[in-house]
Length: 236
Image 1 (cartoon, rainbow, N blue to C red):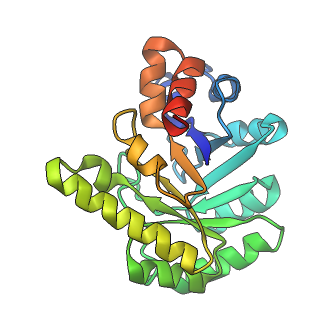
Image 2: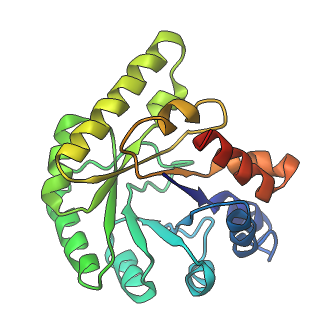
């Protein structure tokens, strides 16, 4: 199981002053030194955190998986084709949201997603869809031609008491179904040092994609150590 570290929140701090620090490119270096198996960035339409310059430099030196999260828009597809990340994860995007609030509405946007995937596949880049852990959603995701899915774990992460076990069961069932559909399976959103272990123990998950909790801990103990501690939870 790989750990992809999302460095968007480092860029968020930089953009608060429109300056040059902290540099998310330097953060990527430290995350990799800490054991990250990949680096994730979300290039948003409004460029609220990660900038085009960041993506360009990261593509030049990240030695493992560079995962580009993006909306399925004409502009972003063009950037992906030009930059050639190792993986593109298509995500929903709303201008007013603080962070991605849920999975793609694949049923509503099936044709748009199919066309985006076709174009991205044309230059040899695999595509993942960020979706909710639901049966119908998984079936439609398969029909779009996606190579893999990233299951939205936010509801599990926020659930309390007995509801948490119920939401974990939903994730487990979705993983099994995705594998049955011959889709690779990732998971992410809301995972932290206190709730990641049950998800990491699910058989068949290819990778976990985590950002906010790692960057938050890094404020106090440093990014390299924060990544290393997350890796220790994933590989006990």
